[in-house]
Amino acid sequence: MYREGPHGTPFHTLLVEGYVDGPLDVCLCISWESALYKKWWPQSSFPPFKVNSSTCLQKVRIGEQISLVRMKVAWPLSAREALVHFFFFEYFQEYLIVVLVNTISDVSSINKASHGFTNNGIPEAKDVVRIDMVGGFALQKVNNERSNFRTIANMDMKLDFVLPSLINFISRQLVGNGFRLYQKTVASVSNRDKDYSKALGDPLFALIREALYASNKAGEVLEVHEPKSEALLLRNESLIERIQDDTHDIGKVCANDHAVEIPPQKEQDTVIKSFGEIEEEETEGSTQPEEGDNITLVLRCKML
Image (cartoon, rainbow, N blue to C red; front, side):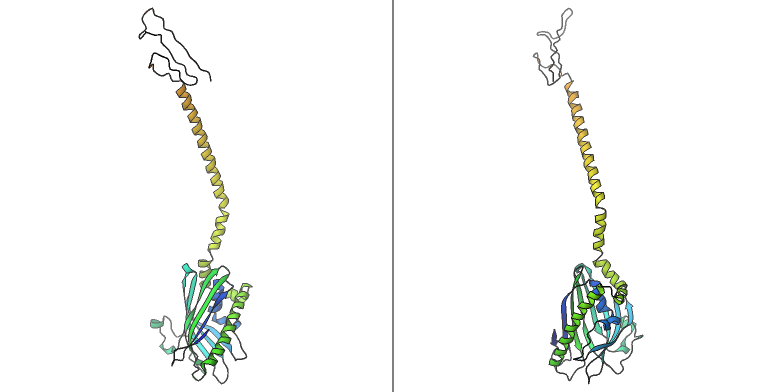
């Protein structure tokens, strides 16, 4: 999508968004590796456009770099180039990564204190026109094999005398073709492109794979240890059964012990107890056995 900038300003806004069939680290690698832009950036005969050279001038740290991209445009315009500063940050909780893309217009003003890097190795513009750009792109994981891509940029293409309608036409052609080529390149990386396979070994892309795709390995580990959990469950069930059997046996012993006890005498009448109980009955009218008296023992037994 193209939109003309505010009236009186040289800026033009470009927006591209869509889904890409590829993992997040591959999508970022294609956008990030400026040295490989010539492998996929559109090369058009009408309007004339192609990338003459693209290289990484300085790797400031992991997730930050400076690149120089030079493009050939239609005659009578001079070649354009962009001195681009890339800065990466992530929000892995939402499976999101963002890259800020800004051009550096004044090389002489660069110093360690203000920019965080120096101008060592950054050339001055010669026989080219350096464009200005402020923007970036965002990538979000949809699933393991699909990502969402969105980029937006405000650009000063240094085309003061070109009609906005012509810029709109050219931009739509280039941006549309560029996004389709980007999608094809993602698929080619999945088919083991050597250059991109080597680039994917960078620590930045390894960090993304570890943060967003390492959970799949964790799932495999859980599956490996699953039989051990089942065995532990069987041992616990066997232990419970043994405890229940022991408890049942203890109940039987207590019942038998209770059956052989002889309760104290309460009434003159005999109280017949439960199974297997033997008790003693005294004759009427006797409290203490006197000498010469006979004591009659009545044994009552109820067989089980």
